[in-house]
Amino acid sequence: MDYKITGYKPERLFHFFEEISSIPRGSGNEKGISDHLVQFAKERGLWVYQDEAHNVIIKKKASKGAENCPAVMLQGHLDMVCEKKAGVDHDFEKEGLDLVVKDGVLSADGTTLGSDNGVAVALMMTVLDDEELSHPPVECVFTTEEEVGLNGAKALDKTQITARTMINMDSEEEGVATVSCAGGLRIRCTRKIERIPAEGSLVQIKIEGLLGGHSGTDINKERNNANILMARMVHTLMEKIGGSLVTFAGGSKDNAITRECEASLLYEDAEKAAQAEQLACSLAETFAEEITSYEPDFSCEISVEDGRTANVVPKNAAKDFVNAMYLAPNGVQRRNMHMDGFTEVSCNMGITCAGEEELSIVFSPRSSVASLQENMKERFRTLAESFGFAAEYSGEYPGWSYKEDSRIREVFKESYRSLFGSEIKIEAIHAGLECGLFSDAIPDLDAIAVGPTLNNVHTPDENMPLDSCERFWELLKDVLKRLAEQ
Image 1: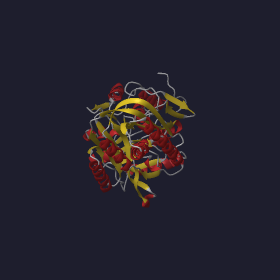
Image 2 (image 1 turned 180 degrees about the vertical axis):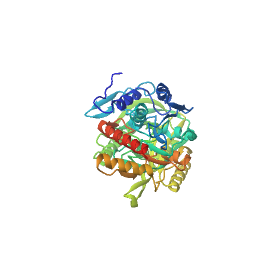
Image 3 (image 1 turned 90 degrees about the horizontal axis):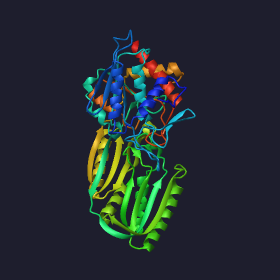
Image 4 (image 1 turned 180 degrees about the horizontal axis):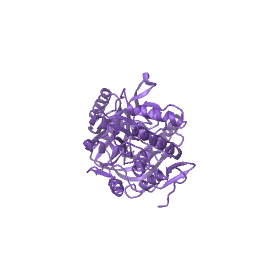
């Protein structure tokens, strides 16, 4: 293989990352990478377990002298969020990623990079492959479908794991250790429709260029959601000028802040369509004034086509659909002011679609407080019921509570201080991590989540500074050595 990442140590870490980047591994399409890891383990004579969900566990015996030390679990997920820029021709089901190295930063050409959580996969492969490391017994756990509800971690038989110390490597900021996280779920609201044939002038609207981001870690940055902006646009057009809804589609992932959305309205005559076009242009200018200071690439394209025929959404159903989106909670819902404004409750409107036979809206609410999460579920049930939708809940996962006494946390603090001369930051995050599921199944589990710096995950602007990976490897190596000496 002709490697693009050169000059960084350890070389095999970055080579492993390039190798797995050549294997398609979007959520639900992890069989290929799962089988690759099984073969990787067999070639090295390591104990390996693979289940029907394509989760993989690989165990490596302790280095010499550390045979009696307690085992440690290293953990990360195999799947990645598959997002690409408008106009980019890339088939995530069949094609690997086109990696780009520029100024010491790794990215992918026009798509997400998959460093979330491919970097953990590559790090574990490096640990398993390196015979010079000092370490206790190691159990590397590779899970699937994390990005769509932690499904692999839910399905995994936890009795295969003997370790009671867990190092999750799905954190995204160097020098920060995560010790608590939010729980979450997926709510899909649907309503059946029978479209009606109609003709007239079609007003088409396309919003794009928004920053987007992770619906957990970036939700507190107040980034705009294209679904919300479009709902506001269409709501105003329908209230002031009328029109029949033909299309409405935004987002492809419930856990990514939506960057693009398209909609269209059909008007009986050209005069009404011209009025709608004029109002839409005025609204686009208003949006730009409101948001371009922090959404610099925002754009809204509006066009009109006369003499069009289309099957439209019935007016009452269209009105309910748009009003439900217009009124739905989105973004930060509650902050804890005793924790410097830490986000306690949020929601993301991730996917919207006016299909041929069904209207659907998908939400991703999160909370670190169980009672507040239940309240969000009830709010969405009420919202759905009020507008004639049925609410379906799936992918629910628990939060992860802070542990007062943590040996692994202290080891990381000591190691970081020794290596870098400063203190590692200890924090809770609003994103979901698999630590909660493993902690639920293994009550005495001592867990921590760490990792190198990853930027703009879940977007095509995702990137990974390579020197941060180098430093994180040194930290992980030192922590394993310390655990082998205790």
